[in-house]
Length: 351
Image (tube, rainbow, N blue to C red; front, side, top):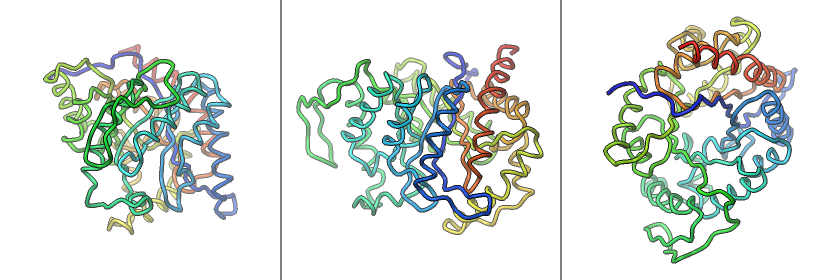
């Protein structure tokens, strides 16, 4: 299949999970202070021209954000232009009606800047926390996505499924001023999930956290083929990748490495991964790796190259990494907005 191009100018966003950061002496910051830091980071992102900010949902000790819509509501009141969304909303363990109500509220508070990225999440703590059985993992997401696809239109909903009682001409409030609610489907690498996104006519967000981003090209091609076969319009494709920007390549790598090593090792112990090595880290920050780490020029060139290779409409960089400090994150955001974004657009305009 011929290469697809982005449907409009590339949007450049940032994502955070509200990772619990460390004080300069190494002691962890409180959940409360980390949440206040996220608000400060979001205000800066708005000021320096970042297009989108995504706030992730987790229910574990290493992340501060369990209620992203509350955080987004606070950000909406302190910003004016940046689009606001989740990264991601774990729909399987939530109530689709409540998810819609919360995001339609954020949409109202932000004057139409809200969007939602739906996924199944990479952690499973929310299932027992909210009383769901992991054996129903697939059924829960499939059924709830079908309902949310109806809710996002803003029209009264008539629907029936297997995970809750039916609805008949049910209005849901607050109503959207400009429906439908922008909604993406996040995919980690499952062909079935790619086709599902196409079947609902929803944009695709690929989570690329390891390996060469270009290897995801077959998923992009599959998505466009599925859209064409289902007679859907061409829709945006975005990616979410980890990264960190500093004044030089060496500084960016040295700042990020100890924090990256810590959180990858911690998750690895849970999942049976080998401990991360500096050699693997350096390889991942190179041209063919999934870490967008370096000086503004290095990161901009890598984003532009990935965007062209995958035909992207949006690139979101996750800038929070384990205990990486608030000051380092603020500098990364500043450089991303003032130097990376303009340079990416220059490179794409040059072709």
